[in-house]
Length: 267
Image (tube, rainbow, N blue to C red; front, side, top):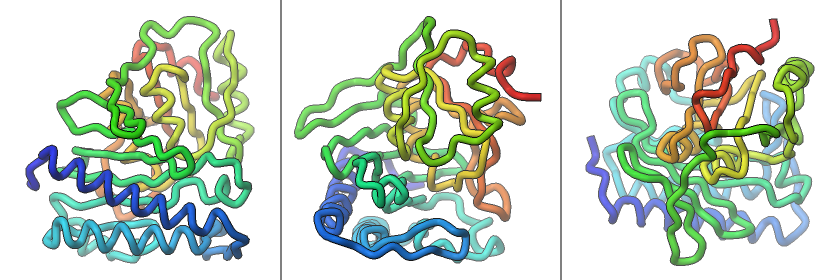
């Protein structure tokens, strides 16, 4: 296992900042949008950020594999043997990027034995970064200043509930209807996990497909802040690279893990 050090953390945050700069360069100008085989959009910003991250992580840890959304064609027979690897979404929230609402992020996570050991989520427009190492505190970085993050506990009504701008399903709406007194907050990309870690949101339900690179970095930050990302099927925290598919099942992310989330799930 690679040693988790201050130098590693700072280098990876710097790599995320370089990727964010590449994203901002595309964001500031007109850009084309292509549609991938899975019907998701991709832009020059996704590809530019991916190149920056692959190059930076490759130089930092040349012996560790990297699995990125934009270069994810690694056979299960190969990656099933990985004990540690980088899991990357170079631009999470491409739909939000295309809409130009600023709600997108760079996600980089280090996975060790199926669980996030380090994660950073960086918002390119504001430059704010949220980061955490397993067994330590979670932080929000504004400029050069790190603030410790804690979730809102106890979470009292009205619960602040994150709902995606781009992925609000009928099942999700049914869950929201079961939650009692709530205030729905529209928020894009992995920034939802970060708002939970900060205590400005309480719940993020996702009843629909996501990929492992969508959740790993945010899960690391949220868990370190006192919350959890739990499988709706098992109630256990997400594990990574444990199956042939890279798609997650339904989940619910909580700031206060004592909330009665099982009673909210639609039949």
